[in-house]
Amino acid sequence: MTSSTSAVATAARTARRAADGLLEATVVASFTEIGPKVRSRLFGWQPPGRLDGKVVVITGGTSGIGSALAEGAVQRGATVELIGRNAEKGEQIASDLAALAVADDQPPPMFRRADVGDLDEVGALARTLMADHPRIDVLAHVAGAIIAERTETAQGIEATWASMVVGPFLLTELLHHPLSVAAPGRVIWMTSGGMYLRSQSDDDQWEERDYNGTFAYAEAKRAQVDLAAEFAQRWPADEVVTHSTHPGWVDTPGVSGQLETFYKVMGPILRSPEEGADTALWLASAPEALEHSGELWLDRRIRSDVRVPGTHTSDVDRARLWAKVAQQAHSASPG
Image (cartoon, rainbow, N blue to C red; front, side, top):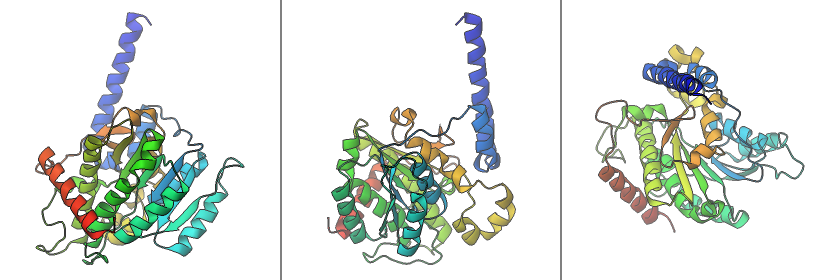
């Protein structure tokens, strides 16, 4: 490559990054369907890579983004494990996905009924997964919903926090060995752009505040980003890499049902579940995911986890969060 050609290529890369940064700064254009439509052309996206022979475990894989992620994984040759609470729905989706298999010897998708907010069920789930899969290549935490009223799980943990923070934390820990056998396994936390508006709170159980389901959801999603970063500090990257990704603003039943005003305004330009799942599916196979650990991604690029002043989590607070969640997970679970 000549010096002039190299200079042109460098200038083009700089221009693309500048355009992406401008898009990111607008928020609305970045988070809606405009984001992936522009960025896919800007950076020449290729379809996410193959997953032949890989074992992919997806919590919340029976609706919305989780279902789209499962479909994409099956179409790329993966052995897919769907985790959800609704057995009838889950079995039907697993059956439908089986028709998308790309190889005669590809195992059909399996549905396992479990509530990831119930720590007893998480322990049982981990045992059955490990019995069937000595190696797990990808664990994707997608389960989660806005809960209108404060409720507690069987272990006495606030339900939003349990299903999106404590349960996934425990499942990740319990599956460390089969993930490390993949050398490295990949853990993907599907967070939410809503987390940008909230910081960590000492009152994660909502015992000292009037409960707000939307805020509880956003704080749990913030905790997921922080835990992904902390796992990266504690687990060697040649064993397991862990990332968080927010899907942008996606047209899902949770958004249309729980955020009605937002949906009325933004509905026409929300992302499809497939667009929301794209980066998670890409992270499941992309070599770039192995070059980093603990990062937050949107549209296949690393992003800042802070947009609003006062929401940054310090290293000390992140370590405190880890200790607190570990205590919640292990004091309430059978181990």
